[in-house]
Length: 83
Picture (cartoon, rainbow, N blue to C red):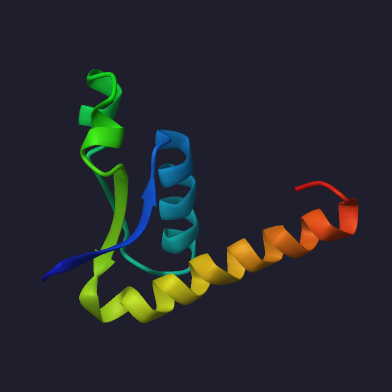
């Protein structure tokens, strides 16, 4: 099973929130490079971040879910006047 990166974060909390949301939707998400990023200062930035990955058969669904969350957050910030 090949894993594909669908989200990249520089915060462990951000990556885990995305992973959790994907799993709640029935997808099989994993977080890569999290422990290295937490152990070595600057590693996350140098290595390209903390990666959220899913099996290649779930990439389309995962990206759609992530994009819908980003769209919902943007619309909410427009409604409240914050961004």
